[in-house]
Structures are given as C-alpha cells and as structure tokens.
Length: 207
Image (cartoon, rainbow, N blue to C red; front, top):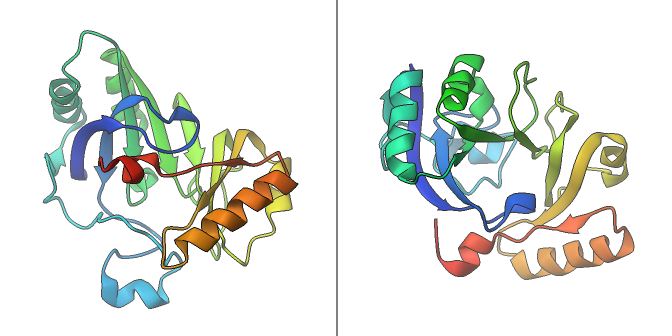
C-alpha cells in the first residue's frame, strides 16, 4: 500500500513542463526532513515549503497500485492520455515498478520530482532531480536538474558534467525571495547553461 498525502489536478508551474496539465500525486514522507517544524532546524533540507506529513490531504489515503491509478483516472477525467507527476516529500521512498506499470497500462505518461538521493531502477518518462546541499546525490542523470538557489554549499559547475537535458535555477522562496530571484537571473546571464525556473503556480494563485 502507498501512503499518499494528496492527489489533485493542476497546471505544472515549474521547469521544462511548465504550463502542462497534470495530476500531482504527493507521497507522504521524506528522507531529508520529517516535515515537522520542530525538526526543521536540524534537517538536511530546511527550506521545504510543502506539507507531506500524513494522508489527510485532498484525496489522501492508503492505496494499492490499482486503486491509486483508478483514483488518478477519476481526477484526470479526460479522454486524452494523461500526465502524472509523482512528488513528495520524496516519492522514491515508495514509488516502484508495479505502480509505474499500472500507470502505463492506463495510458498515463509519468514524471517524478525527486531529491536524487535514491536511484531509480525502472523507467519513468520524465525525471526531474532537485539536489539538496548536505545530501549525497546518487541519481546523476535525467531530463532536468532543478537547483533551488542559493544553496551556498553547492559548486554549480559540478552539475554541468552530469547527464541532464535541462539545467534550471529556481529562486528559493524565502524572506530573501526578491534577492534570490535577482541573483538567479544574474547567474543565468553569466552562465547560459542554466535556465531560470519560476514557480508560476504561486504567481497565478493555483495549487
């Protein structure tokens, strides 16, 4: 059984797939933070802005592969082939080949947003890795690398030799958001291997 925080249909707001309709499936749990505020200051990832604790979100609960894809089909509610983004927390703590196969059997294209600390040994159509300073990056290939910026411990040049098609800097959403955005823009201007990723869904006021 998979522990799911929430499932909802929205517009992808980040990275190379921005603007695309998708069903987001948010898994409960993460290996870089418990999700509880009392543990944030000692967590490896301290800037997460997502609630991934428990199964009490919209359409949250415990699902088998079959029942989860059935729920996704209901939410997608279109004759067109669907697009699923598996996210978290850290989806690779739970996502497996059985679930991906069930998605494929129902004509869904699959994507994952992962911190890259766990390897993927089965096929997913779109892999987005967002590395976090202080963790070991295991997954060094995929479709896009999206670095929340700044993370002072990172030497961004190291990532450019990895096997990704797209390289994104995404300004950290914090009290220094405006400065982070300006600095990310300037970095992309200096090194055009990097592209700017803005959280468009927040600007538009959608989930």
